[in-house]
Length: 234
Image (cartoon, rainbow, N blue to C red):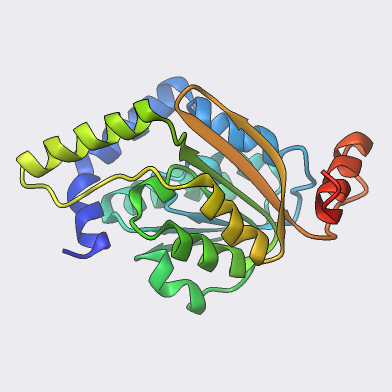
């Protein structure tokens, strides 16, 4: 079964509606808030956003008020995509929004570049995280933010149990705990440097920027730190 078919079976209409109700009641969850906080340290007005595996569109919705010029959401679940389309219409008004159904890793070469790219809990759903991130990095003009499960024994155990239960139920969808070192290597080879990292007990959130692209509006200490990272002196 293809990734898209597995995602469609896992994230159907009931799950999409449940996630929408939770978002409207509680707002973005903790991990997504970390991504948003990291991005908001940078100038976002008039930037183009590409939200990969965007689910019901929370990141796109939350950044609409930050002056994002356009938002493209790529999602493998038709149910998620439909909810996102409905949720974002009023928030973006006349600004450009695009909703694409498919496996990003397969269609990355057909998409235009974007200033800001996000993958919130996406690499954990994808067997080839390196290929996915390589495609995302190729499209990144300035910033790439993504979240992933910590590579710890308790997360690997929980993932194995969840996958076993899915197998018992005949479901093809699987989740993964990928190597942070391998994922960072892909992004660094693509000319990106890690600008920030935060985490919870279960999740990590990393923000990467294009080497040499440090805006004047960024806090002086943060900019100096990133320049040192770019130079390899940290």
